Length: 129
Image (cartoon, rainbow, N blue to C red; front, top):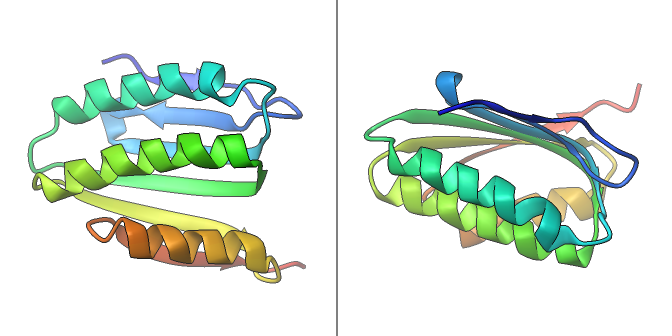
């Protein structure tokens, strides 16, 4: 499967999915005008990749400084697919990066941890300095 790289824009995150290394990374801000148009093709590629995984170790790095409600819905779809892959016998490690003083992003990560229990969740606070 071909890797997926999408440059960040002011309203959409950088997507760097290296399927060959089983590493999926997202960083930046997410409030595209049409979140479904942005995320659905990405989620479809992730699902196709996950369908080929058998007892794989997959690392997911998420460092989003901001995301709007329509992005949240799409992110839940993405994490639901990853959670299902973990339930199917893969090891999915989610590194959740956030600024140490950003309670909103921290709380969303905690919600992900509670909702998608099959994911191996790691809270990764970043220093403000």
